[in-house]
Image (cartoon, rainbow, N blue to C red):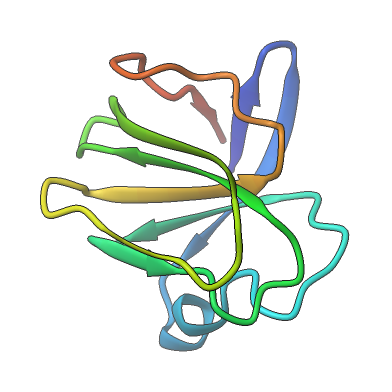
Length: 103
């Protein structure tokens, strides 16, 4: 799956397994893909780089955006359905827009 960012596509990995959800981008450098979590909270402990985070509803409508989120943060949103983690400075979406995905 891929997430569309303007005219570019970024590989999107769905984090379904426990291990994938637990690790996410922890201990990673030079991040060049995106992750999608079906959850209501995330953390940035043990991350080596800042990330962009997009939080959406079930239909991928953007509810919240965090740009250049630093390490050692926790985000909890009870109305969230998906959390998208992207490399820093790649988010082009705005609140109330719908994220475009391709298979």
